[in-house]
Length: 385
Image (cartoon, rainbow, N blue to C red):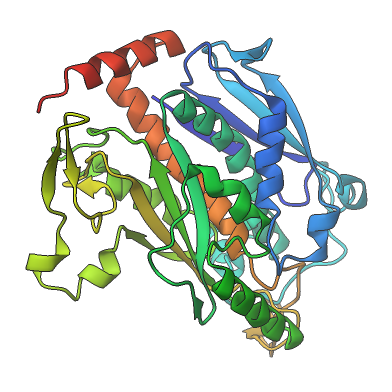
């Protein structure tokens, strides 16, 4: 079973991710992981910290001479700002000199303080911070490498920024990822890109923030990942849970799930055809996003993640209550962005990769990449038609 665990705080010494269940023999390049971490820092509207918040990558275990060993893989991402936070974030006994007692609406601050009986918000926000997603991306890049060996590629692009929505029908393929990343907002629609940039500028001018949506597409996914026989193995359910776990994501859509809710059944589904050249079934459309009955059907797997506007603003307008005095005040300001939608798309790629890799290993199994690939090839060769 493929699983991962992350640890660490936003301003702590570093983040750690442990990935268990990867087969032996998977080629791993540290430069590739670093490149994926750099992609997470992309996007117009990010705060200035993205220019100095370097991700110091260390492969701690589970990899030798560029290949996995079959044992748990441990990756550390050091915090280049740690020297500034040694005293405030020290694990040694002590106490803060700057308690944060004005919890921010929209964050985990107050609920986390109440749940864990903590006296101030920093004990919550350090772990609730989206900085944690750096560890996910580091570990998820290993899953992307595994999927690539199985012929599966994942790309994402921003389809909405605040009120600006990209035109439908223009969807990037695996060869377009570099072009998407070159866009300041990671949008594949040049006209919408310009409008999105202006929308971010307008919000930033007023000290405000914007949400939006990113679409994630997996190409080359075979028929048969997931299951219709158990509720907790339906792959659309697994994808929704994984993507909803991303910070500030408030909705997830598989395929055109929102739009087709308003259509009649006669036009909402994907007609099945036969492709004699490839001796395979094909859908004439992909409203379902590559998933039917909880199982991948061989079409590209498509999901959209909808992110709320960030709730830490650059101007103090969000009303709250001081937890000590119980007096009305405004929430404190921690470092923030005007938008993080472009980066959210990269994290969503990671979460889709986790789910698809886990289900591919469940389906094809094996202790080595040689065995996994052989099992995959045998399954596809004998796929019932």
